[in-house]
Length: 397
Image (cartoon, rainbow, N blue to C red; front, top):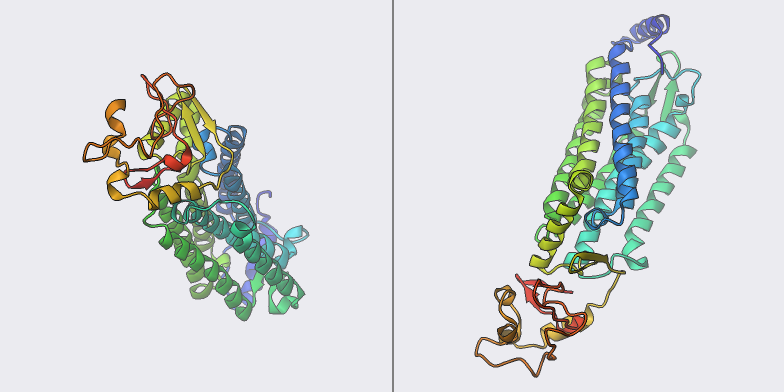
């Protein structure tokens, strides 16, 4: 994209005047927006590359680095689609004249719907793991995503099969793309159906108990998605000719991608920044928080001494559930016992030792960890998974 051609822009202004449509020519403002956002996405690319390189660092692994890389790619698709559909770049004699290719497939389906789907998938993952206590893998978990991808493909194929005048059409006199009103309604109905699903999933996870406020994090992400979609919908239907007016098209593009970047950095910002500047300190603090909450297994993390191990995916929750639901209330282990001495730790409130329930493991036993699944400074006790109880009213798995 070079500096706007003054002759071409004057021709566009005159052509728009013949249709009684006000049109602002492309200016340095359009070029500045494209360059600035390209630089921002370049920084994002560096962050995503760093995140993938350090994908085994537990705080980063917990954010789903591959999923976040997909969020970045979808945001870039959205940006490319905005450059075309909002008229920031000359379209004539370029691939941008394919309005259905870029305006529908790239911007709407791969961009907007992709971002919504990834936010929904992350929220659904949290719901599956913390609320349903099920594995976040397998066909059962990915079935909704597969169904949604099929819906996107069907919608895109139908849109491509329609005549250009009934969907997205390139207008050479104005060097811009135009969406037919009925088709525009169907596009935004599909997008809003996706966003409603995002909202419902986030509503279901509002009470989950996790160590790092993922529910609040995803609430912010959901609010960003709904906010930017509301703005886009208003622009499309209240000011349908907004790409022809400089202030509106710049505002639309800038808001879209400020929100996309905010969405990305709300999720990955803290672990990535701390991994760069205070890697070991943050890892110690992060694992200590998991120890306090007893949620190592939820995050597929096991800590022992000065090492942190990323566990293989497990779905062995049934043994623990059996133990918990078949144990009297006075035999469960509230967090108040977590720091008690070894000779008092495994006692019920009436003073009776739980020797009939738990095996006796001495302080010198090999491989031994505490009730919360980590090694203390002075001793270690190792209990099988099905003996784990509750800490802070949270299941230990």
